[in-house]
Image (cartoon, rainbow, N blue to C red; front, top):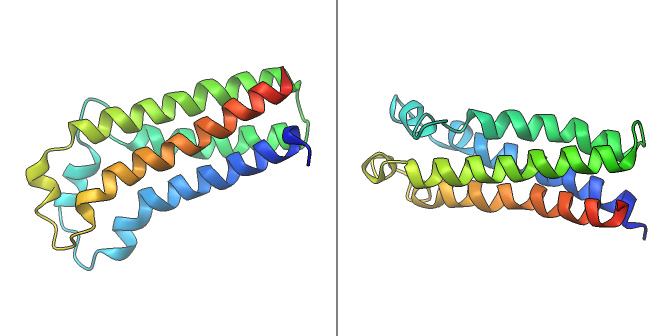
Amino acid sequence: MDTTDAAPTVGVAACLLLLGVLAAPYALLSSPGTGLDVYYSSGPLGVGGVGFLAVLLVVVFLSGRQRRRAPDTIAGVALVGAVAAFLFASLWAVSVDPDNVYSFSAQWMAYHRWLVVGAGALPAAAAAVYTRAVL
């Protein structure tokens, strides 16, 4: 198995997983109300940047997989973008007001922000492996 082919594929899957985790409360909560808007906009940046970077990284990883640009350039862009997404997710997770988290009827919402951080670490790991394989 060639790591330069496998790592971008794993990166795409990790970004799609991150987007799924981000969207889960909208799909799974029966009556999210306004608490979900407050939840997602917590902190200095909110979590919108994480979703934007995840979509952008899908394109970057696919570009690396299909060798559309120089591999070292794609690896660098992927690494910087994925680490930024992880840092944005971490900043958002520690900025969420606990009262807002526990206002939801679903108990799993108490762990959702940490799932976002964990899912945000996966594209960063894939980008690091891809960068190591390319350089």
